[in-house]
Image (cartoon, rainbow, N blue to C red; front, side, top):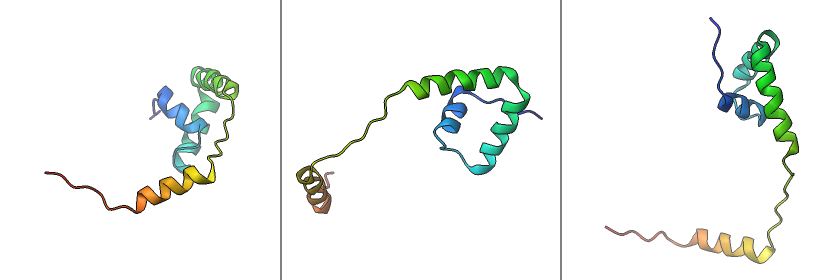
Length: 77
């Protein structure tokens, strides 16, 4: 039985956010389903146009986050 794949599945496939077994299944489906392959190619094209972003927070910002994470949580009822 052929598994229908949504755009969400394809996006997860492109971002490598799915289990290995599902990756193999989608790769097989892409080889055998022209419509799905075209959808994936369209999404991949859009993905490749996205800018790569590198976030380099300052040491001070990182330290503030770490300091905040060490504080006990406030509990309210």
